[in-house]
Image (cartoon, rainbow, N blue to C red; front, side):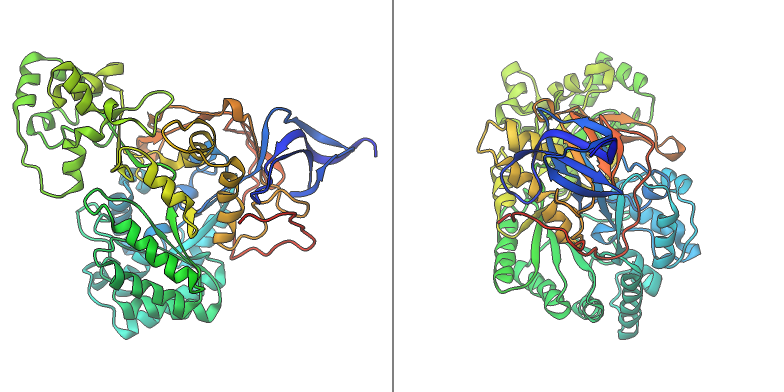
Length: 585
């Protein structure tokens, strides 16, 4: 061979091929968007990437994002692509922007604003409505410039409101005619290439006015009717979140959706301090269903659901104080000035708000043992002795006084970390159990959502750094297994058999990572959404190159301008001739 024989050759990297097998040193050749060789590649590439001393992995598949609006104006879907994500699946938790009647745009924006904490002004400014039906929405996304591949799911909330109007929003039961029409529209969307259907049955999901999401009380006949339609197509996956107040009864209804449809189901697993053992009982039900041959998995996170509190965030521990509300919407400089004023400060600290009993907002304002300085790089498994409560006790001051001091650092731009879910034990030991359960999948990063309080789209980097390298407060996990979970395993979870493994014939989505120096930066507030809306982003150091469809789309996490992504229409078959050498357990 001579000349430039390949589009790209990645040289001498330590290859984690995505199957869960042991790493090996090899070159990787890429041509026309496909991996053509893994091993010793004698031919040259038009571009050669020196990966010596670095790891080479398949691109990461994030099955749980909420970029349903952002995808129509942002081709890069940041912050997910700061962290090696090459395929993003959206339309989760029953919320999204199609189908939608022209006179319901504002209502649907209000639902997404409330449920997923995305600024309504940004959605109004950013979304250029050009659709009503779900297939029309898919066409709009397909015509949008994209740096990565995206898959869409039919959101039950939008569907129910489209079919039932105000009755759906008021949580009225669906009639047989309503169910039949929803089923018809789901079939239409699946035939057009939707990856699945999602719904929500949690009290936590409310619109901007505090009203429950339309799907909260959907009855068995409605859910099973939609599931039956999915089974008739033989297409699509099911995704949902539920509270499981009555675990066995609720799970039996959801298990019935799988039994009727034959389609795979994944559902949210999280530990809520108020109901500390529910997650274990849900996992027991998942285990029983899976062992009976049903395709059911729990979606689990690699770290707590981490709320970021501070003056620049959407939330802070003083929001229930009427004294603070006097300055809440003032510029940050004025807030800092007031909070440093002895008279204002004394009045604020003396106030005792009327906290609602049993509500999450009360936890966020008063659970001082779960509040921590964030740090840079962030520590996502902080020890109890590093909490605000412990710091205050050592300093001989009240927790509120300590909170004020910490919030005023960096001239009021400091952020505090509140591990809301999955941290009752004060460590990630329960998360370890979730992650290593036989019937779970990695997800729940929520990229594109909760943009003023969370930045969990960085989960892929946490999986590598914390669990694969840095953890000190418990066991680590094998890097090859962790990579498999967010590449091949996640791709296959949603029916994408053409990616997630570095093997000849497979789609050329690849990360080259300087693993020894991979590091998460601290989250930061930026105002780059449409209409100047604010959001949290989080970058990472160490992603040397991210290749999507055979082209370098990101270098050091930043876009190259290459837009080789596309809308995925339906499940993707294993390419003819692709040979996977090993398989993960």
